[in-house]
Image 1 (cartoon, helix red, strand yellow):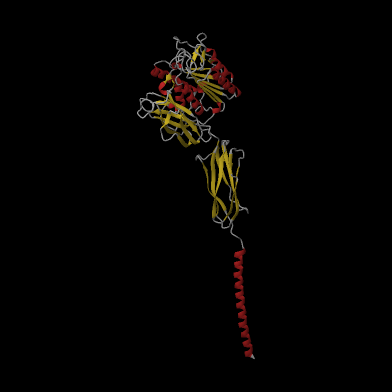
Image 2 (cartoon, helix red, strand yellow):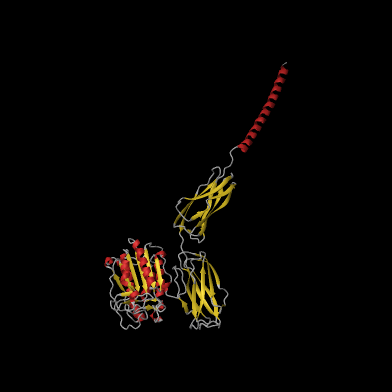
Length: 569
């Protein structure tokens, strides 16, 4: 009996161990199943969006949004997380809504971006013609459908309003292979410098040469040139080879030069003419007077005076500074009985170059500048009235600049001085412009500053010959009263003549006036300018022309104690 009980107990122990072993096995299996379920049904990996490698790119690489320029912002959207970023969108907007003239794509869809991948994004920007000076402040958002957005990106980019280009023939020269005469049936080469003298870049510039007479023949390889982009102040040299056959009957050969650019409004066409039998002692002797360069860092072959080139560019503008510039040179064209000796040599060039200094150094805005060459009496009176009325409208801020190069004459009886239009005879001054009337009109405007520059004499003499060649005795003009807030710079005094500086292709007075403006970049006082012009003209006129010429300064009582400290820019 005892043994049976012992065997039963052992059997129970064995059975219990088997049960325990099975229970342990079942528990372990349960743990493994539970772990697998946690992996498959737990928290998923998340996306993580960032913006990287952002940059701004513009056409002319000045890091500005210029008017009429294509630009873009580019960057990468990177998903540095493991999860998929779903239905990603780019939204761009400008914080300062008042900025005008700038357009861009406001929304771009990128779709899904898997984990640890990226997508490139480009947002085009267009600066329209009405773009104004200022800043465009962009905010760029990367938005994910479920809210897993990137931190926004902000760009602040300067904008610049439209600056007009101006494409012109800066210089031109005819030449022959042997440096001899221009002859029929012999090759003639025309070399021109095309230049952008405007304030803005010119795109898609094209230049074409054309002979208008069928008896003139093109000989070269190219008559049309595609110059592409011309930056401000940039110039290109072009050649055109041609001849005139023995059937050609005229004495001059004209060559038409057309200039176009992408706006089709800022190219200045010209006709260049060479005379047959023109005697060239050396190549490049027949020169067409040029228009100056704009930028100080542009150097060109010197076909004219150094003051005509490298004109400083001062960016400060004076919105109420008005200028009237007149250069009267060709009197013989308008009056019978006058020969070319009665013309005022270089007066047109004086006015052309002073105009450039007015725009670039003196800060006159182009809309406020009025320019005449070989002006008639009607044209002169009309523009004097116009500038006077404009100054009257803004009298508290207005400034007037008046420049005249040409003939002046005094009335033989009253001694009153006149400015002479090209269509007015020196023997009949009824239609001429009385100098005292100009002073009176300008003074009555109430302008805060009136600056008058006269490269003319009033004694009856001229640069080479007087307008009245028969006058043997010069007349000392009457001293006109200067009123208002006015300073008058005159080229000569009393009975003296206002003489040329032939080597510089300017009047002596105008040359030294421009020289000081160029050297100082306009950063000088009226007193300094007066001293420089008087000292240099007085000495150089004796040295070069063997005649006295002493510039005079006249000042109104209202500014007698102030004018010397006025500054030009």
